[in-house]
Length: 398
Image (cartoon, rainbow, N blue to C red; front, top):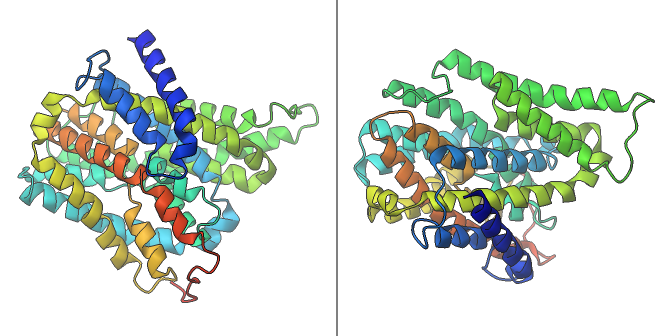
């Protein structure tokens, strides 16, 4: 399986590179290339590859960690201090409302029992930075829009995990390797945030020692090496690695902006590679059993999750903010569901909770639809601000 996976990933990566120029000016996306590759060689296609849930969960975690660490470097303290209001609205108002709406859809549209419906609401509440990264990385898109999406997606993945685990424990599940005790989950969140601050501070102090110098050619690998160590430490002490990744990226950009700028091209390439590998793994998780478990109603459910449960709460959360109508539409639409939801759904499926397989099936369909929809519209939305005469940002304070 390993040899076949390497070959498929290599072919998909080469195709993504060769088509990347077309992807920047059309609805085609490199995300679609990796997804199609996984679907073709997976159980829905030729049947060459099939990854189990644990492998998919791990691949999703690594990809999400890499993307969050890289995206965190777009949010140094000077940016976060100016831009905290909009992400706070999204996290404190928009995310809980999304949870409620998804749970109601799962209960009354999909017909799930209340337990799986509430768990599915928590699984699909966070947004994914992977599929919004193309918009976040466009410098001509207003900073308020990019910062709102970046900071929100950087934090909500880690914040959603405790809610998922608490609900799974409440409804009879026992996720292997995870606690369902609220104070332990809070401690893991705090540990993630703390490690995200302490690790860059430690490396920063080491670099101030005269005996230690980094060769210019290897300096872009410094933040990457630190991120790998951070991932391992979080695993070892059971800290919340998603919060740790984003916080660490932001701290690196704050302490050493020069190193952060040097690392960004490397970080984006590493993120693209891990994202591609995770997408191929995820696509092989989808088989006829999963689709049969979800049924045709899952497609309608997925569409409503994308066009109702994110845009409506976001519109309410952003009322009276400084965002223009164009900015509110962009922030509302770019609430993709991705690797965090996949990882959490796999955890749920192995917990023994009644209805766990339904949670995994509906999550898989929603993520598949979201990946295709959001990765094919990021270029079009970014072009809204190509015109230098674009609508100015309102001065109203949030």
